[in-house]
Length: 309
Image (cartoon, rainbow, N blue to C red):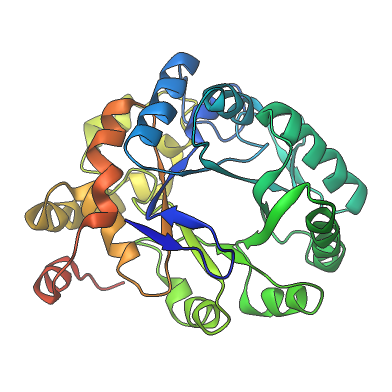
């Protein structure tokens, strides 16, 4: 199943390939070690199963994710759409720094094109609206890149309604990438209605709450995560929150076919959401979750899943 992404004209699969984890280890926000050959096989299996877009960023593995995606695209026909971002840079000393200055963005887009082995990027996104006072400079630069043909479409990630309005005064905001899951629902109040009203395509990230709702997580699994997997030290993966979240997983499991697939389908049930980014690390994971966009949840299913807070 495919759906048009807002006003972009791109027909996308309901599930997209999230390439954060395939950036591998050795940077401040890693998911632990990842074999590149396994990542390439995973991307190609996703393409075989109809997933036709990949979302990455230069900060993921400090460029490594984009390099792996570029290698995986070699020979793929049709080529999946490639979405990447700008605005987050390596700050050194295991840290990140934000930069939305025009000259920095121009350097970033050239580096991303080189790593991805592409002549243009299908969707270029401002990763975070930080610093806030530079949003207009960044969005003006993005509009220039679109005019030049280096990027086909431009979007925002993690923007508020007020920030989207400021960007729209310069050039249309074609897409938004917000955080959304059963555990993170803040965008329902204002952001999703605004996107629906303005025909802004919405692709949500972390629909499984970074694996917390996948069905594969447990207290033992959290304890066994490598030290360089950021989730090991995240409060959501620790008690008392962990037990609450795992109880939700059991409700998802009762709906079927798997907790993770149902969690993804739940985000796609919202009429303003066009696609969900799922972080795949193996072909087996793709096979389990590629069909999440086909799951239809009944009112009874939604009642079973429902959780306060």
